[in-house]
Image (cartoon, rainbow, N blue to C red; front, side):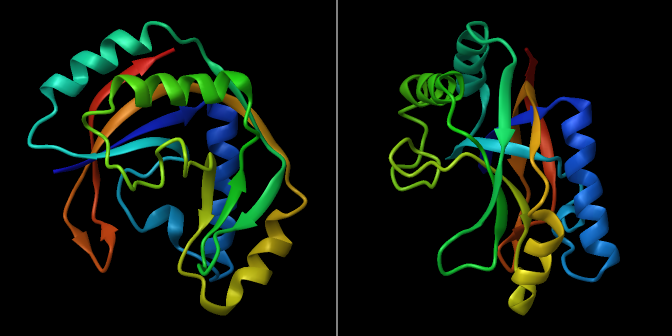
Length: 179
């Protein structure tokens, strides 16, 4: 099964991002925030392919005890190279980088070496829209003036359901820890 470790935001930041997702859907620009049941605004820390989650949950329980809520700031909108995915880029605070490093040091045997989320590749971000085709500039104009700030208040391990055309059809929360 495919899993991901994500950091979820405080209510105000969560609602700000959801309102942007709704606006983009209403304007017919992106359905990203609604294409998968159970999707929440988040920063992804790691992804895994596992036979089961028991051992990884034990490690997550231990490491999450060491961390408190993490302040995050998203000052700019960016686009992944050769992609039609736009995201809010997160400032790389010492606190955020330490949490990411701690998770990867403790979960090394579970993580995928060439994952986008390993320290050498990781770009902390919250996705705004994906599969945009020619509407990247229209989305950028809507969201560019926004500077978001908030806090990661919960770590969540999710199990992703079967993918159809590269998109998981749902998420199931396996473990969570409120900070």
